[in-house]
Image (cartoon, rainbow, N blue to C red; front, side):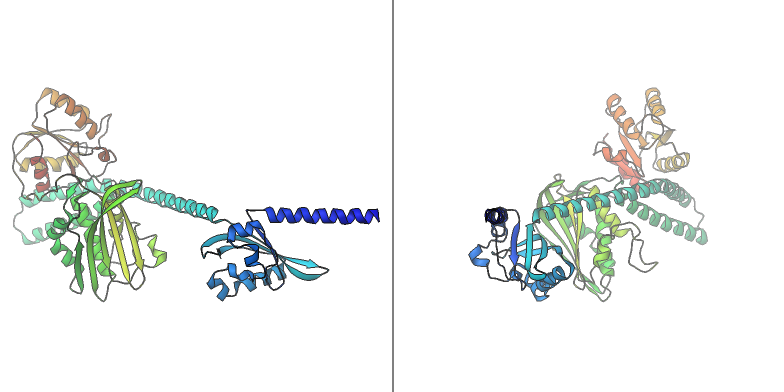
Length: 505
């Protein structure tokens, strides 16, 4: 009898130790179910995770931990069926606590047999909400990084192409202006030159959109009164929406000035309005709104203005939303869109120090929201587009001989005498030997010094000498930060004259 007593004692101690272990585990809900799913045991982990005391939950069906949707779909019974047939059931999903809150659970159900008969199930539940949230956050960061890398790669490609193309357009547009001055009055020749001019402007607009998408555009940010700017381009916006679409406004009277490039802002608005119009083939309403927002999530922290462009159109399918800002991506038929409109808006918003978001629901419309930083200076006003004649000597620093020839022609038409050098070192020698009234330099040049470095050097040795910089594309231009005025290529003669007129004397 001693051996039998020892065996019973060992069995009792083993069962007692196991019971204490199960009942004392706080991180896991460990409990038993009968073959029908009724709860027959409960540990402290179940009470901590799900909120029920043993008195409240013993004898209840385990389906009460499931969401209403899962219960309606028969998921609890299906889980027990899979555990019985396959020997185990595992899943992750939403579960409900006693107080009605949800948590993300890792669940394991094992069938328990005795003498070949099913006597119930062992169920283990763990709250992994924090782990899931961390995983989702990591996945979101990885997706954001992948998107950023993709846009950077596309930006490098488009920026490089646009740089060379802008120089070609500068040569074409500048030479065309010179030709027009000596036109003979031949109608055919005038029509041909008009066609060339139209194509050049179209090419410049497309290149500008590419550069803005790539965030490599040499922009001139300034404080802008948004309501006044919208009023100034109202006719253009009305023409953009057409006759079947109504244009409405919801610009709050206390909206702060915004800091952005005027022309890029106008282009972005027009692109969004046209995009909204195309999303409403049967007509509808496009609403342009503006409101103040204060953000505190780096890198967007501080005062901003949110500009909303909302349509009542078809909406954007979810499988397309991730692609709409990519250059050349379009859902429009061939010949009806370049796929650069939204990419320009995306690039403009980010280069201006803001961002853009989109919210869309199929059949109910879309809202694009551009977030732009608040402007602190006085809003800018319009300037005259008439070329202003000047006098004096200008030092042109340009390494491309064809671009230099065009620039010389435009400067001479404005009344200036021009001396041209090909690099910064030659420019310093020329200024040392012969005085000039101002310097007009390209930013991208061969040699040890680029145009911006030349400008800073001249600021040191000739602090009163006016300096105007020009570029079609340059990483260096981003570092100017308003220290020197920048004229974007391709430029026309009135833009050149206005830039020169604004130089400090």
